[in-house]
Picture (cartoon, rainbow over the protein chains, first blue to last red):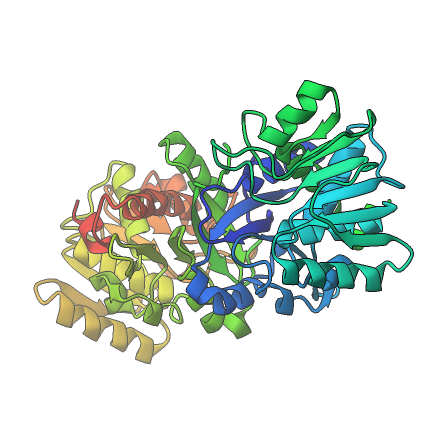
Length: 273
Length: 273
């Protein structure tokens, strides 16, 4: 790879930044695709986000941005247009510059999970999903699953207010699918997803009781870990299909790459492609 | 080269930007030196320079900047401290972040020429210089030559006001050296430098009459060109030492690389090293 005056720029903005993996992954994708672009880590201090981010959007040879912790909500107002997935979760994790010069934003966090399930050869449409966690990740995954056509989502979330907010928003957006708040994985669930932080710590167990599951059930986890997380271990031991946090990350890279290269118009378009 | 979340950033800011060569040159230097850093082209529209540049300086993993046309004067106020070379010419072309977090700026344009002369094995100290042009490049080269110990500089510049400003500033800063305004290269000159734009156009001739020169004379040009410029062609035909615009560019890269890696404190320190 050579960087010249004509090389186009993409970047991920976060605080901290050293832990991000996008620069390596996307720079390699650009190289493999013959695109003269590099992907950079940009460390913007949280206290100065608005001023610095606004200025970055004025850099003329910058074509796309990812936004990570703690800026996904604060970045939303900087996009002139946002996709339906971003509106649904009130946050974005990606922006690109349109030919008009306007910045368009969208949220791909949930889509990454759906893509990962599909890449492993499991369908999503028609499944009965049980989802642990209604935070940022859970909310994004719920919307992406609904958009991808699951029949139902049962939400397991200890924060009742958070759970109600998410379920009522989902009911409004997807009136033909079923959404409920539950306290354990219901029998008949065929897709179980952990979008809670349980599993990040070494001593963590399962995020909740899983009960008896159908043989064709797929189990997914957002937690990225070298060793299998407890819920992935559970799936491996019992022969269920499984999708790891790393699978989800890779699934998102595909969707984002398509978005950056203008192969899709939004996260939703990408979801239904 | 791999870009990760821990990779440090350097950039050149200009409008336009596609023509710059620093990203390629410095990224390769970093790689060769085992420094985990990349050098980027950053296109900031001239109308938005102040706001965007201020924000760039807040990016925490950005360690150094070059500034090119048309921003060398407008960048000066953004440096908390500037070297003597920058103060002398009221412009900077490089900034780096100190351990304290403060940005320090300096002007290396003239130093690049001095380094190039030295790299070709010609001394600078004690020479009688004749210099065409008292613009940005001429002014920077005059100061760098004076700092490097030439005995005298005779300035050939059609704009009388410009010539007087530069000569009086040089006399103030370097009271022990001789500075004069002349209308042709005086006999006895041993270093002739073209810092005027003459030579950029295909039909250009010499920037002025060169007269009879000593055999040991060195002739330099700031104009970058694939084919020899008229004044370089003159030197080649008559067997004088010569330094091209490309040599000067390379000479500056050395000095800037030392500055970015904190091997020197300023352009002046670099000049006398």
